[in-house]
Image (tube, rainbow, N blue to C red; front, side):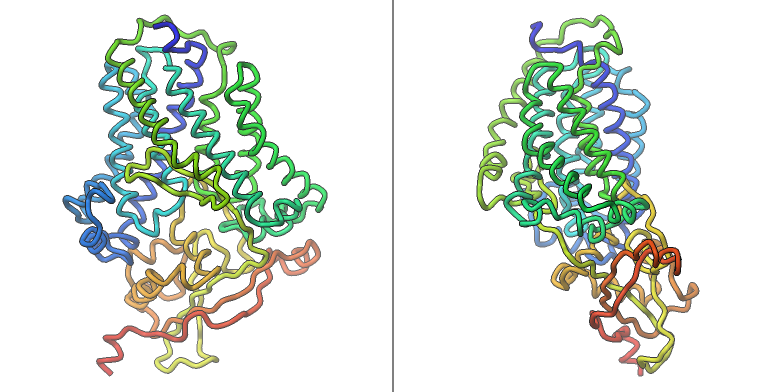
Length: 475
């Protein structure tokens, strides 16, 4: 059927698939390098303990059937290798059914990871990667032109991402309606980037323009995705420009990057490339794609109802396979940045004047003289959760104690998640404490005078001096 495929999106599909493969590589790489301390057999939130109380139907995963650190590492590195193969275009050399199966592998592996990842994998971009990755299975390869139905479903994802984020802002914090949220957001966002200090110091009228432009892009432009070309391409381009502005302003894992990738699928790039002639799509492929489209549209009822609800929630999955989800970000914006600073001392009797030394994290602010770095689209999971801990101890209740225990035990896998430890290997501290500080960006004058990009003020104790229980028993 001629209506089933769209030759004009041949180049768009090529870029989309290669870029999505890169994001898969980043996701699996992060899982392979960070899992042991987070969810490994001796991790802060071990997978074996989780699967004992959560049934397979609620969280389908390979690791419900078997888990060991070696098996998890094998799955993560396999996912990384398959993603590299997809990036190299191996799926284009396979029969259509073979290409679909190859795209299914990273989706199934990453689904297995997310469904046992607990708090560490509770971010909206995890579900977004899975939803988009599932659609990529049915996007075809060089043997067929891109199917119109899958292209439509990708636009439907992009619509929900942008429109959902716009609505949650307008329904949430009043500063979005007053156009003042960016007076605070660049300073209080979870993980600032190398340019965030400069974004914060832009003139306030520019911040107002930023917020207003964001509202237009998220509340008006998404509807244009479903209009004829070239309007839809123009709408997608506006979204891409906005996302790159956000990429420059902070570290938001792969949230902005995957939004750009999905927007690329809406671009008509036929003027830049002539699609090769291909045979008609096989009937079985048309049937499968049509059936999946009907299924996903039917499942969209709950995310759509959430969009229209006054009690809209952000980043919610409505099925254990994460096929159709609700999205949104920053429905409220913190006015003050609070950071938890973890310190240790070798003194056997901890006092206020003991030699307390701070652990430094890779991405989250610590040393006031250390300038933030760019990590996104790589996701530093512990750093992000430390930001939540600064908002409220309730966010850290399940994992902060185990983190402290592992630092006191000189756990190698946990220390690898950090930028640096103030104690030499094999000589862990006797006590650890955590203190809450208020951080703010320095002014231009303060930056020139001190060289520090942050200024911090002590707020209160987050965790009193703590030592290992077995050490106390020995004494």
